[in-house]
Every structure is written in C-alpha cells, then in structure tokens.
Image 1 (cartoon, rainbow, N blue to C red):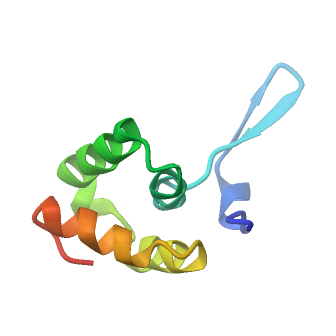
Image 2: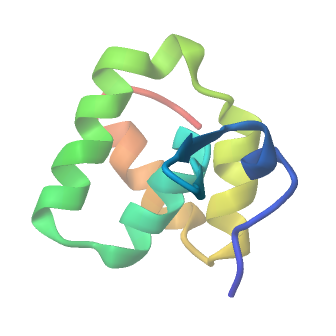
Image 3: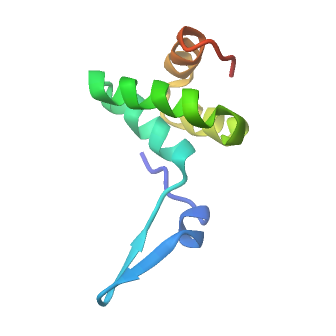
Amino acid sequence: MELYDEIWDNKKMKINDAEIYFPPVEDIIAMKILAGRPKDLKDIKHTFRTSWASLDKERMFQKAVKVGAEKKLAKIARSSGYKV
C-alpha cells in the first residue's frame, strides 16, 4: 500500500547531500491511524485540536479510504468534536 503522490515532491529539504521529503500532515494522519498506537491516536487528536481549520479534509478522507481507515478516521474525528 502506497500513500506517496506528487504532492510529497513539493515539500522537500536538502540536508547535506540528501533530499528529504515531507509528506502532508493529512498523509501522516492516515499512517498514524494504521499504526494505531495510543501515542498515534493522541497525536491525531492533538492535530485536530490545533490544526482542524487548515487541514485538507478531502485529502485526509481520501488517504484514509486508500488505507481502509475511513471508519477509524470518522470515529477519531467524532470523539474530538469534529466531522469528516
């Protein structure tokens, strides 16, 4: 299962001679839902509280669907007081 897409190419940084790519936060949320550790769920809820207005909800939902985690995403959002 691959979450990578061309948007990752837009956020990169060169450190020494290596190019480091940074996935969008919406992709990281999907990865954290898959991991499912308590810390990951805490991180997701914190991100919702601090960044909900700026999140690309459509992308976040599409990525959750891609990894089969749309129900978990909706549950986490609801428990945080938001709707996806």
